[in-house]
Structures are given as C-alpha cells and as structure tokens.
Length: 246
Image 1 (cartoon, rainbow, N blue to C red):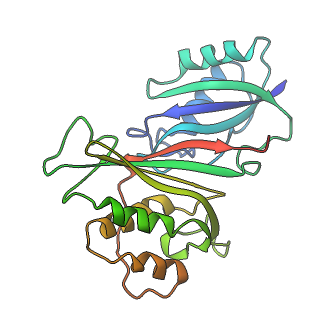
Image 2 (cartoon, rainbow, N blue to C red):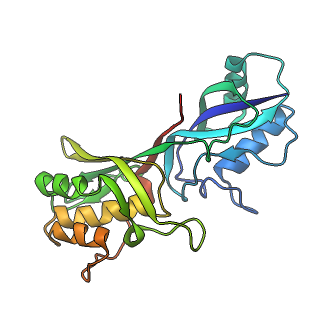
C-alpha cells in the first residue's frame, strides 16, 4: 500500500465540478469509480482544490492510497484506459504517507481565456468567454498590477467556511494577448470561492471603459461604493498548476 499523487486534466463542460455529489458526474466521483476497478477500497480521494461546474483543469492534483504492484507509469496507463474521455492522468508518483494535496500546497495558478469578436464562434465558446467591444490592454495591465501582493479580497469572493480569512497573497497577475484572444494568468497562495471569475469580470469591465481602474483599487481597499456585479463564465477558466515545497 502506498500513497500516490497524480496530476489530472479534464474538460469540465459536462462535469458538475470537482467534488463528489449524490447523483451528478464529477471529477472526484469519476476518478473514484475508475480507481475501484483497480482494487482501490478507500472512502475518498483527496483533491488540491475545488473547481465549479464547467471549469477545466490541466494541473489538478489528487492523492489516494492504493495497493499497486506495478510502476507509476503503468498506473497512469491503467487509469487513462478506464477514465471517461473528458479526463486524463498526466503523471503519477509515490509520495509520503502524510502528503495532502490541498493543505501542503503553497500556491495555485489559474488561467482565464476570452476572445474579442462581435459574433460568437461555436468552436471557441466551450473554452473561452466572448467579449465585444474589444478590450484596452493598457487598462487591463493597470488593473492586474493592483492585485499583486497581500490584500483582503472579500469584494471578490467568499471563503470556504463562514468566518475564515479573506486575505490572500497574489504573486502573479498578468494579461497576455494572442491575435483576438486574451489570457489572464493569476497565481496566489489560495483563492476564495468565485475569486478568479469575479476578478476577470471586473477587469473586463475596466478594460472596456465601463469603470475606471480606480474601482479595482477601491474594491481591494474596501472603500468602493461603485462595484461591477457579475461573474465571468466558468467555461473560460482552467486550473493550470498547484505547487508544493521542493
């Protein structure tokens, strides 16, 4: 018996989030079902972070204990031959028995994708948020830089449990463009519920000139009375990486 850490990728479009639910297909339930075919008999796998319905991942981390008399590479192949087509295991390794994918993590990195066109593109709508009018990159950059550092993000999300801290430290917050597409890369020690989607929504409003950049600063300081309401769609969001101490 050993504890394994795996890196999961998934298309979240038809999955009802990462956490197990009573009847709906989720990342956790599909992974546990697959592991059971390999002789896994534990109660629950552990995940590094919770993703909403429709959110994707290329670097979700899960861990579990399994009696497996083969190599980690063979475990990857066995899991991938049994997982549904929208999920795959990218890597597997044995880790210490006390490893916890959530509590041992030191940062998470997300990427949000959107594109600017006046007419919808059915081939991109599944993974990106369409916006029009186009965004001003200078305004996006100004808004993104304000997030770097330690702030109270209570205006952008809610904690996993009532009363928990809403202070987070952001170490990366940057927009990059490729043709008509924009990508928002953000990395922090942890994220509040809906925090990334809310950050994107507000920045897009700023980038389209609907609100001044100062609104972002005011929301971070808790002094804003002018707050854009809404969330960016889940479909544009991907959990890219979870990092751990070396």
